[in-house]
Image (spheres, one colour):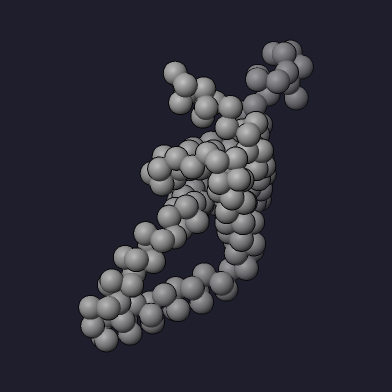
Length: 168
């Protein structure tokens, strides 16, 4: 019970977690509004939402487990020169293609900085769970906030905040 209470009080001891949740709500709202402006079928909108969630999850994983990921990439690149050249070429090419879409790059930078600040705030509060627990906690916050923002952008949060007859 003590560890559950400690995790329940985590947003009060590390307030950057609340900021991370609010940023992810804003990003989910922004993604849903951009998607509504497109004139594409619903299946494509669902695919776009899935890709945005995958991108957010990837940012959280990279910002939460950098030492593990760098150790794995270093051991892969130490296998041979050919693997090193292919991996470097792949990373540079994919990074360059991704940076061509600067609108999404801004979202990634904001989300990445917020995740790193939330981790720093958790360290400041001396609440450092295992890396897997930290990863799951931050993934739940980011994807939950983005889903909440998406629902707000689609107008599906009216019953939560307004009486039945007052919904616009």
